[in-house]
Image (cartoon, rainbow, N blue to C red; front, side, top):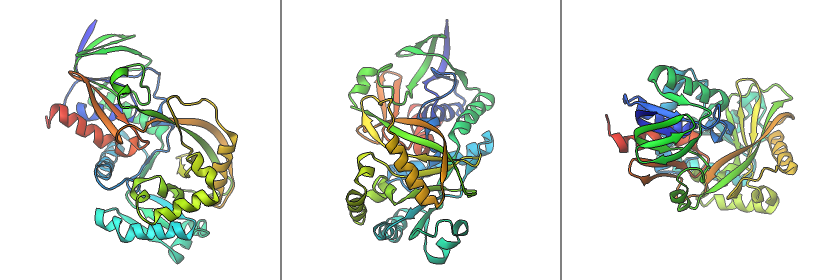
Length: 377
């Protein structure tokens, strides 16, 4: 049986859902196919941090800023629990503090990052002094945070209920050709097809995807309970992130931070560890992460890596934590650019992220892609 549609999307992660929204709000008929009963990939394994502060100037910053507005709209219409009070990036050393100061005095002003650097009394007043053992804190005022495990299902429900998007879960797409996809639920025709298959580079469109030479990034992650009441309401980062995120990494002051990491804690660099902490709506904390790259994600976690991350979290928070869950994050990485929108055949595209910021830029990136296919209809 053939069912005609305007757009067929393979993958119900944040990229797939963002493309579905951008098309359905234009009145287009959209179907989404997902091989599992509920999304289980990068979009639900992450921190739920939609960061603007960390994005490099240019297109990534612009996409993050535009995505912020879309997230705000989704929070209203889909009932997402979205924290919009920003993030805190803590400087633990003089080198990290000097880097944050240079960022605030230069790049932040030049490119319109909304940030505030807290020191002294302002830092000591934060969370009743819980973070006063740090030198400074960069408050990223526009950063957002949500609980992905609940937000993604809520967004799916909204798209189905209010915009008429049809979802086919537990449905494997076997083959894609111009104008048609063949699945375990039948064959479906569509004017356009977009494959949003995350880090799966072999099942669909394998040959054109191979030309991008993408890799897979595997991350060790934890969910924990703080042993001291914190009531944490902000995403938390440390100066380790300054050599990871493009907003800071190319500044001259980042060289001293990188040198200090290599000199004092080379194991953190070796395993790509930079601390991120996200509070959940249930009083727990998502903690991570490490970064290991390759063609296939290893299924084996190293307990030592978890121990290092727990140690960093406890140092940053100033309290002990109790781990209640461990898992692997995973996302596509190291392509030719931060993202790709590849035409594999007439009417067939692949939308891919090559970095772990899909939650931050995905909604606006999808709007741009749909605009390129259908215009402002």
